[in-house]
Length: 187
Image (cartoon, rainbow, N blue to C red; front, top):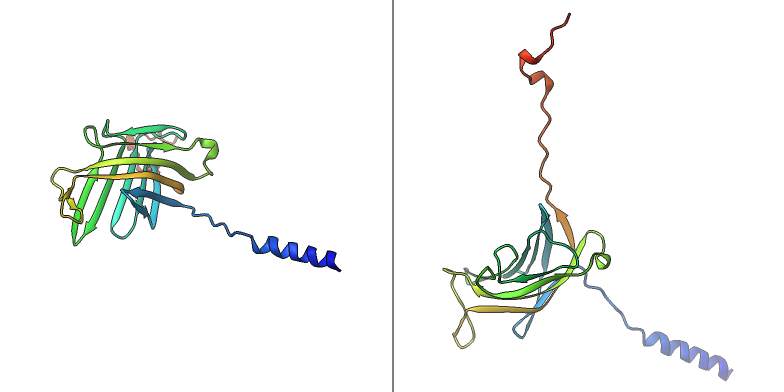
């Protein structure tokens, strides 16, 4: 009897120690300074081989632009205008804009290799140090100092579904609308 009691007790112990694991897929998140930020809306769009990944919540938006992207590749930010990260925030009806470009900011966007990408999704990491855009208002911290640079580190985009923008093909010409001189006469 003791034997059966010990077996039941061991079974209960194993099932009560079970941990629930949940997967957050898709996800787009990063650390802004010391604050954790997670997008509530995200999308990834491919257009002519270029990739645009957007993560947003009600007030903030991070967009990653990558020209001619490839899985497994890493792209450096802050050296050109073709691979760029942007950040915008709406606060009290004012829009604040920050970006990397050919002369501002720095960072990287790195894609997982193709064999680690579930079909139809995009996964990778990023770091972006973005400077305020010329002419944009500047955010201020708690002590009213201007924030000229925002820093998103430990950035992750995970299994965001890819949608492809397909250009419509031109409609074929209707042969009845052709030039009458090109028509062959009936014998």
